[in-house]
Length: 193
Image (cartoon, rainbow, N blue to C red; front, top):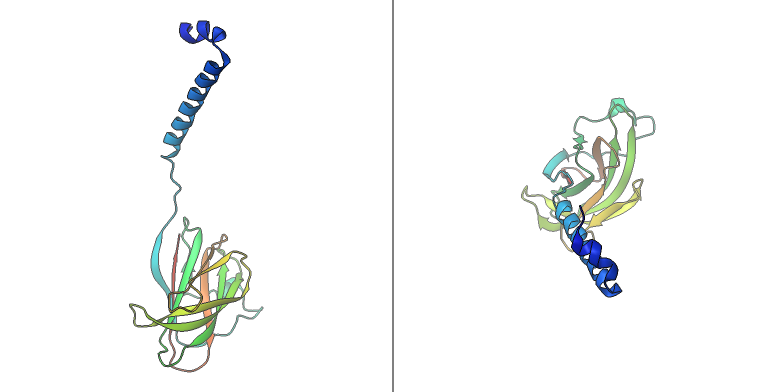
């Protein structure tokens, strides 16, 4: 359909008016794009904190002959389909002196062997959890396979240190903690987004 205003007059308008008309149409297109894109959402699961497992006995690193699918522990945490990142926090029952330990994180895919994700040096602080245990407030990565392993509040100010890393396609994760002394209890909690 012929628009007499734009098609018959536009060729005779000065350049500055043509530029203004072009800018208006471009801005209108951008406004419509923003409106329609504001309705697009990315589905991401926001998981609440869940106890992965409690540890009451020290555990050493898995040997190379043990990292098979048949040896995956039953107290592993299954990562949900919509979960892209995993977040872990630790707590312990030691009140007299700061308890230290080494946490080793492992993961794997369905019907596949176990992979080492990374290890962390842990130290308890003074902040008490709802469970009555004390949160870890110093967390230092000692080795890691996942390049993007981020720490939150890890510098020893009696906060709640957490480690966050990409799920990297793993279907499950689990953790072993090596520590000294008896009567110690560790709680590992997991969340993600």
